Image 1 (cartoon, rainbow, N blue to C red):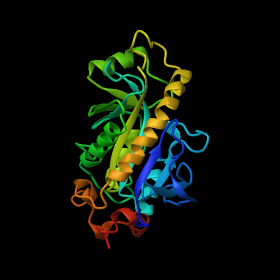
Image 2: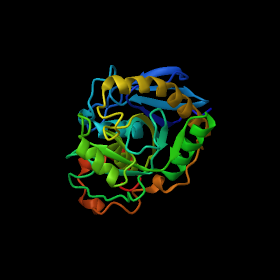
Image 3: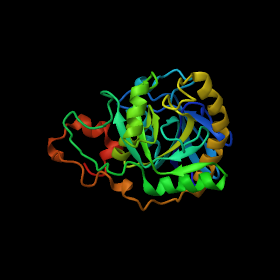
Length: 288
């Protein structure tokens, strides 16, 4: 077993720990962007060292709009993470995605308002390719892991990332359906963007908790309804993630690993020294 921590797990609503994790230790990580949601839980899962982070913090105290997405992903990069499996509760926008089903989306649609979702700026400009926001290889591993543990899973689809913390209005829910959107959540788009900039493979394991408010039998989404399905989903999610960790390769062959190779526009000589220092874990291989 290697001591390298190459796999990161971000647990969303209802997933605040990994039961199979052994050899545990908490590790605080400082970042130029402030504090992550909490300490990273480092441990061994299926023979591999992983870093687990509860997205909303201990006791679920951070709203989607309050999350320090940059610190969370930067912290993973500092630890050496190359793969991130993100588990998240979502609402279903289509009949076929039944509550307690799982979805491995391959696209995102942004309905957030002004969230910071880049590491760049302050004298450094970079534009990463994001046509395919989910790592195809990691997404396939996640899907295969779902089927292996017997979960009801769907491959592909578009995740609408809304601002929240309120749930959708009926008009919004109907509009997203008319656009052909599949599921809706409040957190994963920023994670995906930042992971790509950090050259980390990223995939979402979306846990369906409700039909949003468009469905005639579910016209009012409530926290009680969601919690009931979260509890049912949590065990499945842990099984899927553990299976995926066991299946992940030790070396990457996807394009995520070199996402910044042709993305940085600023002449290295013009980049402020402080920016080079702060972003060294991300840009160090391209700027000396």
